[in-house]
Length: 182
Image 1 (cartoon, rainbow, N blue to C red):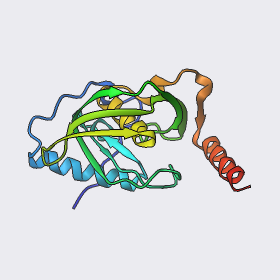
Image 2: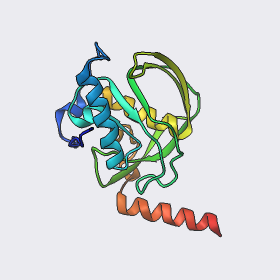
Image 3: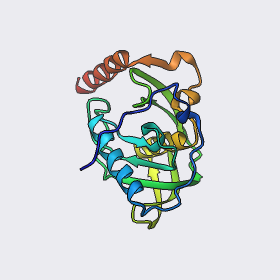
C-alpha cells in the first residue's frame, strides 16, 4: 500500500539541487517511491509532483491531471511516470499562465512557459517514450522538469507583481468562471 510522503517546502536545499539520473528503474525502492509519489500527489490535489518534493533527489516526476480544488480547469489525463527526461524541442510560442506548487503552499504566480514541448523519458517499466505535450500538459511537464533541475516556479516569474496569494487566485478563477457564464 502506498504511503503519503511529507512534501518538502521552499527553503529545503533539496529543491535547489540538480537531481541525478535514476540508474536502476526496476529497483523495488524506486518502484515504491513512484507509488508513494502518485498517492501523495493525489492526496494533495496536485497535478504533478517531482521526487525532490518528497525529499528524494532523483530525476523522477509524476504528471496526473484531473480537475481539483487547486486546478478546477485541469484536463483529465492519464497518470504518467517520467524518469530521466530530456526536453528535445520546444515551440516558438511562449505563454504566461498561473502556477502553484505543492512545495510553495498559498502562493500562485504568472509563469512564462513554452506552449508545447517534445520530450523523451523512461516510464516505470523502463520503456523509452517520446511524447509531445501542449498547453496545460506542457506547463505541468516544464514545471516538474524544473524541479529535477533545482528550479522552482518563482525563479521563472518576470515581475514580483505577478505573484499572488492562493486566496486572490481563487477570486480570479471564480470571477473568470462567472464572466464566462454570462
